[in-house]
Structures are given as C-alpha cells and as structure tokens.
Length: 483
Image (cartoon, rainbow, N blue to C red; front, side, top):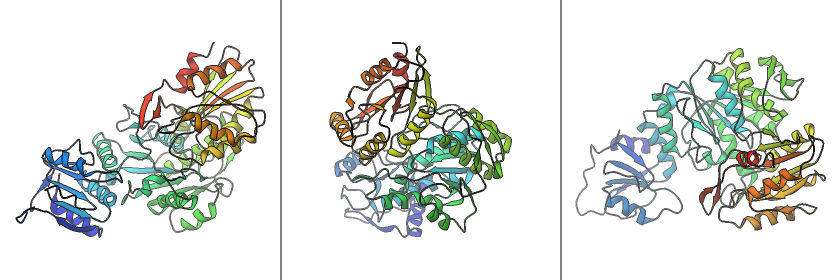
C-alpha cells in the first residue's frame, strides 16, 4: 500500500515531480487516495492501481483501456487526456523504481545484495555465489538462466535484470520467504533504462569488458556501453574487480576510495596451478579448489564470486564447497557420443566468449572440431563481424551457421552476413535441429568435437518477437547422440 502523498513526496525529493494534470470541470480532491497495486501493463489494472505509462511505443489506447477497467490515476511524462488525473514527471523510469521501493517496504534494506556485471560470465559467477551462500545462508538469485526466490523453485527470467516494479516485488517475495542474500546479474541496460535507479548494492563485481550490445536499440558506442557498466561501481558499498580486464586502469582509479578487492594478474588474488578440474589460489582465498566447469575463465569467475561472498559473510570452507558443487545449465555442458567424440553446449554468444570457448575445446580435443553458430536478430549486430574474426583465427574449424533467435530478421540473411566475415566457405543450415544432427554425424573419433554455441539452455527460439517452440540444444544433441 502507498498513499498518494507518499508518492508525491518521493517524486519531489527526486526533483522529478512536475504537476497533477486533470481535464475535469471541478477541483479533483486527491487527498488520502491509496494505491494497493502498481502496474505498467494496462491489461492488469484495478480501480486502486497506480499505473505507469512507460515506453517509447506506449499508445493512448492502452491507457483508455485501463480507464475502462476503472483506473483512477496514472503517472506519465505527458498528459494523455483520458479523463483521469495524471501525475506528470520528467523521468517515468526513475519514478517507477523509487515508488516501487517504497511500495514494497524497501526490501533491499532487508537483504545482502551481491551484483555481477561484465560482458560475459555474469550467470556463471552468480551460480558460484549462489552455491557458496547456500552452504550456510539462505540466498535468492536473479539470473539470466534461472531465478529462485525461495531456494526451491526455479523459473526462467525474461530479462537479465527485471523491470523495476518486478525487481522490487521479487525482492519482497525473497524477504517474505526468509532469504538472507540476493545475487543479481546487472546488465548495462539495467542502468541505461534505470531499472535499478536508486538501488545501492552491498557488493558489486566487474568481471570483464569487451564490445557487445552496440546497435541502434542498445548502446550507440562502446564508450556508452562501458560507462553504463561502470555505474555498478558507483552504486556499490564495496567492489571486486578483475585486474586482468581491458581498461582496468579506469576501474582502478574509479574505485580507489571504495572498499575493494582486485583479482587476477595485477593483484595478490591469483590462480595458480590451473588444471581442467582443480586449481590453487593465492591471496585472501589461498588454498586448493575443485571445480566442475572447465576453462580458465570459469576459474576466474569462481575466484570473483569467492571474494565477493567472503565480504558478505561466507567462510573459506563454504567457498571451497560451493565452487566444487557448481554446475550451470547451458554453460560448458559436455556430452559423449558412442564414437567417443565430445559435444560441448555453451551459451557463448559474442566474439570474446566464443574465442574463450574455442580455446578451451582446442586444449582437450585435437581432432576435427565442428562449430554450430548463429546470431540473434535485431540486437548486438556487431557480434556478426566479431564471430567472423574469431573463426578466421581457427582455420581448421568446420563451421555450420544456423538460426539463433532471429526475431524479426531473416535467419538466412543473418547467417550470410556472418559468412561474409569468414575467409573460407562455411555451410548454412538454418534449421538448428538439422544443423546439430548433421554436425554429430560428421564426427569419427574420440578426439573430434561438436561445439554448439549461443543458446545454451534456452528451450525456445525468438521469432517475430515471440518465443517459438524449440527443444533446446542440449536436448537435441542428446536425441542424436548415438545416430
């Protein structure tokens, strides 16, 4: 519940209130009005809802439909003149976040919140942190892969970082469920469109940075992308930063006055004696660690998560056990064909993560390696050239280009664009299931490998703005494993 007086006070303190507009022919008495529901979906309103008219494609008819359902108040950046009072603000997204905090009784103050950002590795690092905390604490997790608010039920998230109204409702549910910690992935988009406006994190972790999410509907430049990533550092009480990442000097100077830990090559917290399934650490977490996820980058993610959890009360023993227990759906999942060939299913979906994935596979599989790859439509268009550049550094790699969330674009055209950046012939099989089946039939020995990159554990294809039926890369690979 929240009273309109509270709403106006919040907006005024944020210097975001402009006016209450009303076209009625009498003075509207809004004193004492109370809202018991917040919504930004005009299909889900009640007479006591406070509605937020947000989005570049918001239409007046959406609001008119809500009014017909009894809606009495809304917040917007302009007066839509639909016969009910409009609370006018300069920034609807800022208003949503701060009002949601108050409406849900500031759940962020009742949880220890750990946030991960980075071009890659957020989900894996979040899973490491979740498994570390669950040894002795009661964590909740908001992840691209899976979200849990009670530690028992898991569901797929629509966004890396939920819209603010959903985010604070989820936090409140986690508090109600007795959770002590919340682990979040925080995307650059979350800061760009102010989904986490006004939120302070107990620990923020910056894993890495490389060009991604640059395009007409995302970030216009790399500088803009990096800037919005760095906002996590400004909004965290303590931070953990990868000293081996590109542009580390900028982060080092930015966090100098904030309690911090660095890890990697320019710090005391380093990985030593790295092997496929175990490694040693120096520094604050000195000791021996077992790990199920192969690849140096996964060991780096484990180290980052361990340092962050240490700051939030995890013991060294909890960190060792949590790292050893961690697996992640769609991250370096490995199957074996009857001929001994390996099948790697991984979420690698940009140039940098693909580069690391291919490098790890090459360390273990010296035979014929076959890559299945696509690129999403209507987002991250720079990835297509990046994929070509990475593939060109692996001249012996066989490549099959296929559909990967084509959305409103033609997947054949997307594949052809990727192919235009590759300096040798590649095969295009748009049907992803057929592409996987074909690749598995090409292996012959235990040294061969099929690498299925991009979708990870996603059991859908985004086509024309909607989720279309798709069994998932892992399920399809299992289906044809012995064919």
